[in-house]
Amino acid sequence: MTREEVFEKINEVFRDVFEDDDITVNDDTTAADIEDWDSLEHINLMNAIEQEFGIKFTMGEIVAMKNVGEMANSIMGKIKG
Image (cartoon, rainbow, N blue to C red):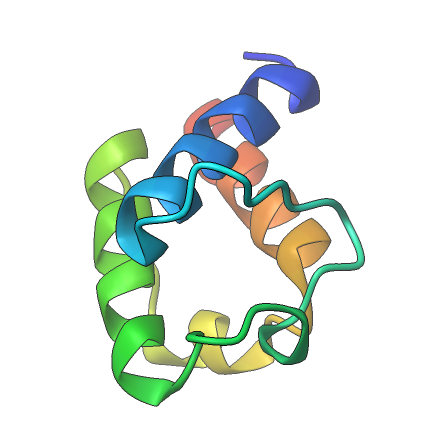
């Protein structure tokens, strides 16, 4: 799967979780950029990402992610690994 394909799926998940078809995330997107992205929605988001890609993140991995680009990098590493 290419990075572009990963981002297509990530965007679908974000749109579903936040119920907003206009959301488009990129490498630099953070919780501060999306109004409803609070700690509870972060749990829902990470769960949805894990389900979409068939992967699991450790708590350390989740805490270390500073933006969506780092999330995509982590996903890429897990699906290739």
